[in-house]
Length: 123
Image 1 (tube, rainbow, N blue to C red):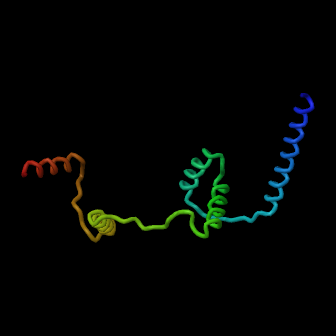
Image 2 (cartoon, helix red, strand yellow):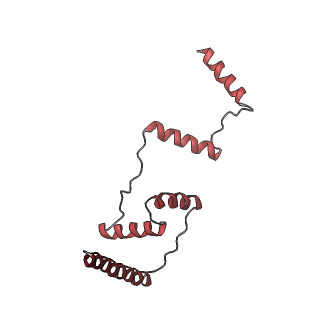
């Protein structure tokens, strides 16, 4: 029984050495990839990937390998489809932001609520 246990420890140690040697060899044959990302995006990605026990670099490697495996992006690239009302609201927001459309402004929330209340009483 003692020899069996010793044998298992030896096999585990050899496997550990082989695995670590292959990791060292892999590390020696890597290339650098420099990418620029928003600091907030990086922080959020770090938080998510750390929960899986991987780094952003590991995640990029997974993404690239999966892309190679399937011959393209590993997710669908589609444009969102919005209904007409949403498209009109988005255009209105762009027009307001660009100054093309003027909107009423208020000096206080109290003033805005008073006007909203007066609009309700007219109905």
